[in-house]
Length: 519
Image (cartoon, rainbow, N blue to C red; front, side):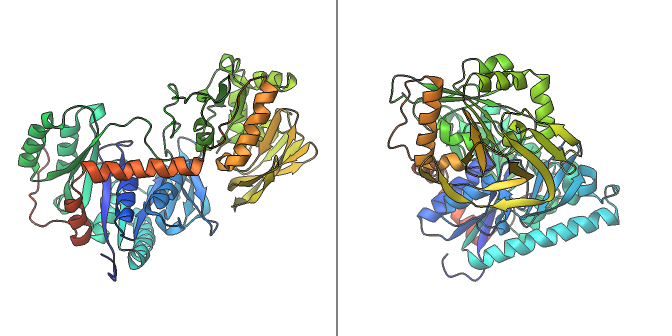
């Protein structure tokens, strides 16, 4: 494929959210990269509170940043031109080409700011404008890379949104990309989901559906084969692979609480500790929690147990409590108070027990917040655990800082509207430390191995635990190993020859159409 003037591509769609689109896209990217194909990921429109800052200072979804790592390329704004960051059930911040352009209701985004009716010319105008932006980004990538692997969103059969779709069949039709639909068989009903997804589409969209990929299968694949043959007879489309269920796999989550490298929220998987004790970390599951992937690096440490909590009593046995980032600092503060978690945090600080606030969590721990931007709540008292005053600005800070803390080099990234004025305490990254309470705006700092070990030593000493950080744990190496495992899944359990032909040649011709309700 090398040397082509315009790269080929594929859209990975799904029967549902969380079917495995992000993982399959990353796996295909890593498989192709290992074979020498110059490949890039792409997601036209993403809705997620987990985001990342590229080296050019653009904000994109973290999943696309990790897919870029799987592809062994530097992430850019072209890979995720539209990012929606929910601020409530009704509205989201719109990030276009890496920069926030305003807050908008769902009706306003899919129609006009005033809320155009579905199917009107005004609504179509916004869709065409955004489709023009995303197709331009995709074409730029195709001009640079041999292949572009696109990830869809939700399901392509969300027929209520088809008129405004720019991320599923809308982008596939604009680029003439073939589509492979991924289904999570662990949920059940995968064959009905494949058939129903295809049957609900228009003939024009159906013509791009090349086939299916089963995800999270447990058991003997031969037992599945009769169903796949029947599905092919009903739809005329083949299955390109059956990926087995694997514990602990995944890349940075878009919309689910999961510690990516060591298990799930309620069922953490912990490697044996190096010292005599384990270290227990409780993460407050605040509303509109963002970049909770910050704690993945803690969960990767042998002997560290990470869990998300929403009750004050769950902090009792925690050696470290993390108040994570949030798209609603004032809302998170109110939630902590309503649930008694705020009082529990104040008691912890008074008793010298460790607390770490990151970004919005750092702001919560301060003395005072002035917010006329995010919540428009005006003046609000914080928890008063750190000598910090926060003022929200309309201009968002997007940065990739580097520095030193606890005698170790640290890298991170910043995504926030709140500007912190630090009035005392010991310097800690861009924030401060008072006793056993730390606060910073830096996301990703715990991925710096030396700094993470130094921080955990401080936490263990303050908590009275005989915990010793492993001297050789490398978060970067663990991440690479995980991405290689995703590549292995594709290489070993998908028909890679057929996938490569799809990517190179486009959608296969002559596939039958299914009228709604067929057969």
